[in-house]
Length: 287
Ligand code: G4P
Image (cartoon, rainbow, N blue to C red; front, side, top):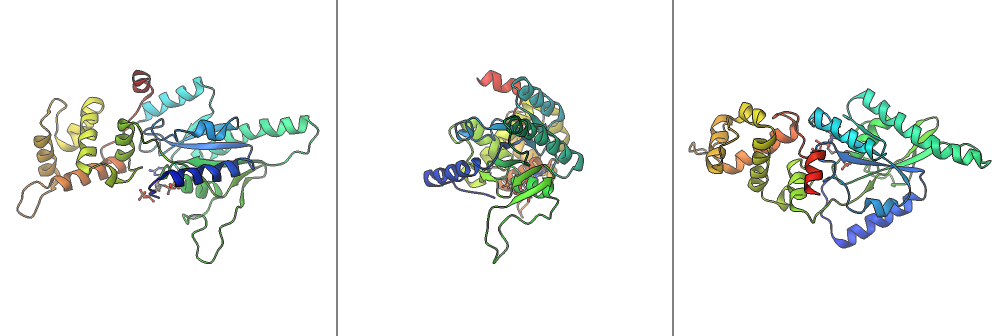
């Protein structure tokens, strides 16, 4: 889902999440495995306050496995339970449930210790648009891709989805806004298709992607497009990609817009290879 965020939307989103937080024992924060820090909501910390949290890195099938492993270490070092998943992989879904059960059990054990009756533990999914919230809920619930509440005539109401005997998930995910203030973050989110293409020009995003690939994944760039890491003439690079992959106008000239669309399609679908746009080392350098 693509959403244009305005202050009013942000305030409403925050209120909704805060309302639902009261109903759950912990939150499941979804991030994009290709850019975990860029795909965080900038205020999540303040919004969830002292609720327990686990992280699910979505779309691991598109991310660089070595970098994903480094991110899992990063979260482990910070005592944040985290797992990386491909939503179409059943074993990955089991891992999410297992981690959630561990986290929820802690809370229920505390209640039981205080003399209360054990009950299922409850969680809600949170994340920015397009990170995979509906997909994950549907996979965990074992149902088809229909989004919650979008069937005509059916009033959207809050429901608990029973994932396991002792684990329930709020049917509606919390949708939060992405980071806006940092330009590099914007480029990363645009590259993976999380923010609207119209916000930054397609050609600009592709220039960012190509420079990134030249630095981090030169072999993949060379293999798919015949572009070397040390070639810095962007016009020449676009021309080469256009000719190699057939992004041409009717007169046979290279069409720069078509080249941009093609590179982004290739990147987002994993056709260039498994690529992560952010790794923990870059982040510590930026910090
Ligand atoms: P949202 O509710 O957070 O907004 O996200 P949603 O589930 O709609 O997922 C956004 C897109 O991400 C969907 O693609 C979905 O199939 C894809 N996706 C979710 N999880 C995974 C995953 O683990 N791996 C991969 N490769 N893709 C995943 P889509 O329906 O094609 O939408 P779009 O790409 O046209 O936005």
